[in-house]
Image (cartoon, rainbow, N blue to C red; front, side):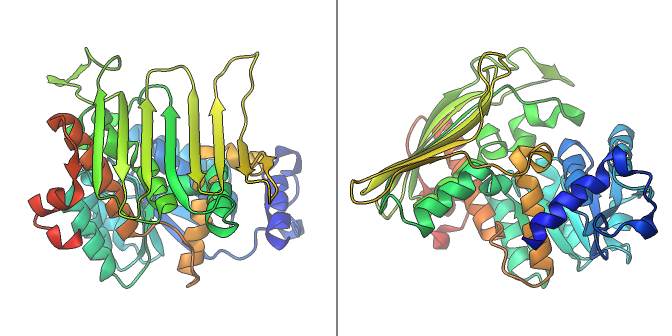
Length: 405
């Protein structure tokens, strides 16, 4: 209840209607003492989302940013200015941003292929770190990140925030806590959406920089499949192609090579089977999960299609055997939180990050979980290239990591 009141009061505090109230007269609207200062490394669309949710939550602030692109820096300034008059510090180098003694934690949201390079500098600072997904674009780099995290004395959280989307929060509770459908046997996730957006340098159009679509975009879903299955996969089989998007796109003499559709099948050692269905050339954003157990089925979805005749929302249904209740719900967060992006998942990811900084258990994605989400994505991309099922043990052995299988 206390946090609910804080959320509501924070919303009023940000309203232009109450801008006339001076700081000394803000009691209900006062966010309380500042707990931590963050620096954001990489101030593109994801970095700006991190700035917005940090300032909205109110207990922390974004102290400064480092990004070599001036337009990204200006965008970051505009975002922070929506919440506070405190100026944004702009650093001239990565090292200056990482080692500023005024800062408690770093948020790394640079292009995927730079994560390991940036992290090597960041860990030398000894500060807490939130590293965006995917934590690396290939298995050796992801393993290095995992090993760095194991020996790191501070928090090193991976930005797999989809586990905090309302439908997945409630689905995990139904499956893992209430055990509404018994033992999980099969899983499927669908993502249908529009193409990748533009990025500075267009790095997300090329597999060598992004890790490939099934690593860059889909590591979120592989993390979720692993969570629901309660295991790590033993094999991955995938088919996919570049059917529509960016087939004629060239940038600095290089042709785009990213997938825009795929079907992925995962097998787990505990007998669970899972599938993932991706399409990135449809005029909507739609996600669905179906979990079948030996005592029932859960289905949840969310979507936005932009059509006036059909307004989608969050939806979850649990259909159980006759000896227990079934139910239909519409999981959601407060509207002003969901509007910050990713259905509010990034906001709640930040709450978990703050809890971790406070020394509390948070349940946020660890570097180990981030590693396995990359492994599945790499295996799926490799399966499409080879045209055959990929053994996870064999794939890890190819990289000298057979002991992990």
